[in-house]
Image 1 (cartoon, helix red, strand yellow):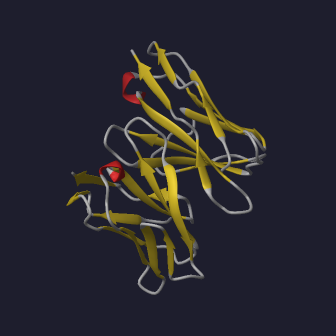
Image 2: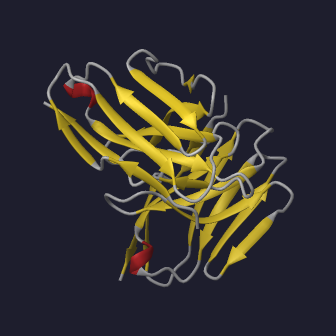
Image 3: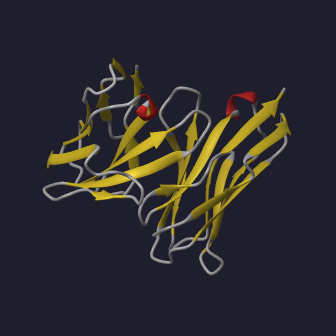
Amino acid sequence: GENVEQHPSTLSVQEGDSAVIKCTYSDSASNYFPWYKQELGKRPQLIIDIRSNVGEKKDQRIAVTLNKTAKHFSLHITETQPEDSAVYFCAASHGMRFGAGTRLTVKP
Amino acid sequence: GAVVSQHPSRVICKSGTSVKIECRSLDFQATTMFWYRQFPKQSLMLMATSNEGSKATYEQGVEKDKFLINHASLTLSTLTVTSAHPEDSSFYICSAREGASGELFFGEGSRLTVL
């Protein structure tokens, strides 16, 4: 089945800096790659996703890039704010398995 | 976005009893739903994939006789934890795949505590 690896497990940045989280997947059949943000005690919320027919997608301060050949995709958050602090998960569509998560802390 | 409702949000039960958790897609039909388990500060671990009208596909290491999944309609999947034990205490969360976009929508989650 699909195996999704995510790193780093924790990431601490200063407010205003950028944050990058990376994921790799194993199954070339996966064609949909969502990123979720989970705040403490709450359900995961989709923040951005990308399909395998594009290499990059942007939504304001958030962007995702996909390299199908290398089977990896990344989440980029620019101009980070304290409210971006949460746990972020990546997933790959084939089997909908999640990465281990990245705890992002944005220090004011 | 689409809405997935999960019930109950919290349940406390005695060891040896069974607990049923419901997952409903409120405004779309979901042929596929997923059940996850999440321990504190850990990731979402896929337990099983629930397909409407057929048997669920369980992940390796998940006991199908302990975690019974039923997906009898396009809007409802249930997870029954049978003969629950304290080690089954966890946060269980379901998700449903919306057909057109393929996007996954999550329920609110159910926190199970087995005494």
